[in-house]
Amino acid sequence: MFKDIFRQAAKHGLITLDEAERWLVYRDNRNDTAHDYGEGFANQTLLLLPQFIQDARRINAVIQQQ
Image (cartoon, rainbow, N blue to C red; front, side, top):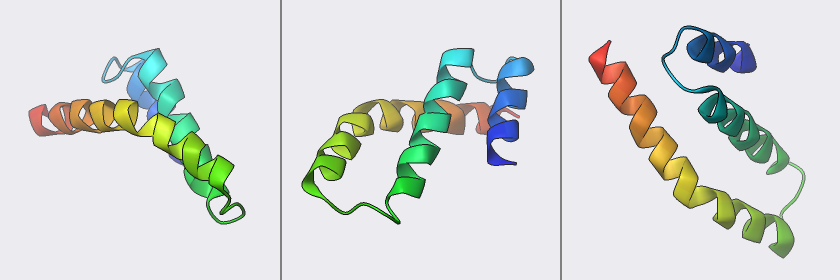
């Protein structure tokens, strides 16, 4: 269901296809937190954060406009 929401948002022009793909990566990363607590995982997550913050702000703006 989560993935379908972002695919539909991209399909209807609310977000770009690239943004939708990144949201799927963020979701997978979030799901991995239940299984991996290592330093490598933490470093991987830290690399995602700057773009995640930009994407979160953008999707918030889209929601506010709707």
